[in-house]
Image 1 (tube, rainbow, N blue to C red):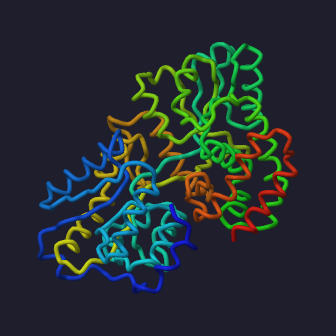
Image 2: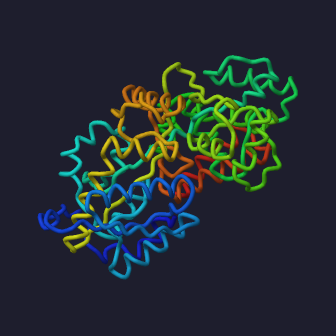
Image 3: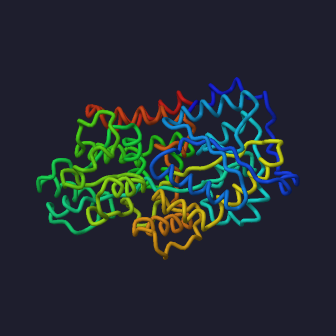
Length: 426
């Protein structure tokens, strides 16, 4: 995605007010123009299924996927906004919602959200991201937990281990046992930047979610230099020492066969890894899904979410389509359908996952989200552009990636570099 600074040339050329859906929307046949990067795999299947539900309710569905990197989709969105022809809605997430809301006028979804009682069942931090300026203009569609721990059954058998680690000390004990038992790499990894970021955020949130909130989400200088952040770097060093250094920039999925075979032991990933494993022909019996370690004994959920933002259009049919789309996205049955296809969990914390179609991992993750929200231990992912806008995120991930790759950097040096990166990127 583009940084906010590079977008500033567009700001001011358009109104900033979020306009409510007009009464004209009620009478017209709903039509929706939508842009996303979802075209293949489970994401493509899920958005296609959503389109069919839209059509079943009398709407005209016009989805234009832009395959490839998020930047490709953003470039198309920017071009349409500049030309005065934004889509009725588009994929967007995290702090980018607020940033892009300054570029073109958005729809005020407050009345539709209130009618659905949606805000009461959405994690507060997540709700805040989707209502910049206090007005709902975007809706979260699905949630993933990035601090999910996957354990290779074969690696566990090699180590003669049957206990799932619940603290970082237990995680380290299991890593040592796996290494001693001949598991070459106790931690599975890919070579993408997000892999390093995910490991750090899982560690720091597991050590102290309150420090994570202040340091990563609020960028508090004292918290960024805290003993907890230093401890997170020290733990990240242990994890890096157990990883295969020869992964280059490859996607984590490339190494899943070695994980299942027991050559790699533990994987810290988002819940989407379940879908990748199953789509790769592996079975639920090949691995264990568990929450990431937490040292205070209470549920911690590092949250990543996909969403749609709604752009103002004057056409009655597009306004009607926006209203229908907003209503659909918030429905428990639609969120159930979507998550069962993608392997995510519903945004709504009141959706019942006791029926068929859910894995034990999804049931546990949904329960953990609800519990973590209740005790303020749900935090936003740094690695997946939820905690900060892209410029600051990139600067912080640079420090984390360099630390993982260069073992000469000490945790104390890393803490200092992280603070400097934040200061220069502000």
